[in-house]
Image (cartoon, rainbow, N blue to C red; front, side, top):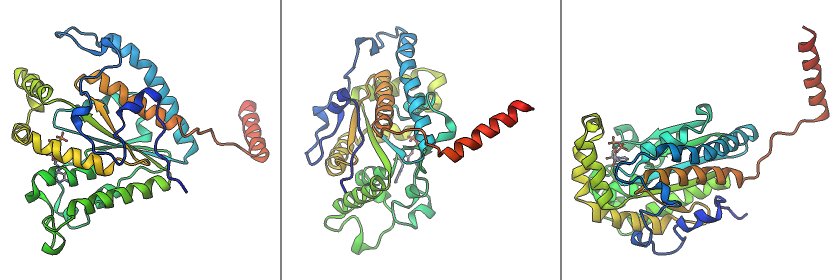
Length: 304
Ligand code: ADP
């Protein structure tokens, strides 16, 4: 059986990290836009215009989600990754505004606990996978286990020397584990959408400064973001290696331009909608017997 990847609209295909290719992030524009109106110029507030553009998207997304829930055949797993300030939280907030919260779960993964570290690295993610009919959003994911800990090997769980990160082929092994895990999920009805929110280093600087220039944004600021920024080059290298090794036909990575927040949000909403629509789902069919029961129930109610 061929395990198929998500179906997406034609114009979104250019954001796919081609499987079995060496991926270089500089080949993908982080400031790409679909429409010039998506560029917020000099503080000019065009949010309303964009809101109108996105209202259409939201309706389509809500309809797609209802079909997903009604048919209960597939689940959607959205894996969201990106450098600090790439806009993961804002994108989730935006996408959620078009979804029925009862059919969607968001999981944010922070530094693993000692219980997490006492298990294999996929354990904590596997426990919270979406059931059929549901959409699961992972805000960070098992990809952190080949990213942050690749850049900072001292943060990895305490593994025996003989199987630890200093052994030959350790990271390749993790990529293979991830690919096998995802293939298993896809074969069992999960559609996986892996989204890398791609921002430039300059854009990150602007966003960090914006947090420091406005007291109401102080709460978003974290010193660790500045510390991690010093490792920008190492993170790019870790991302490129990971994207090259784990973008597959059945679970490709989408490298979404995220320097313009509204662009990223639109693309993500469209990716989810088209992936669900591509499943060609239909509302459940009922037998003549069942339909008779519904008719009888209707009559009972009407007689009240
Ligand atoms: P966020 O930046 O996602 O809004 P936090 O500021 O709490 O949330 O950051 C979460 C932290 O958890 C990040 O520094 C990230 O690198 C770290 N983290 C997530 N998953 C792992 C993991 N598997 N191993 C080590 N650190 C992780």
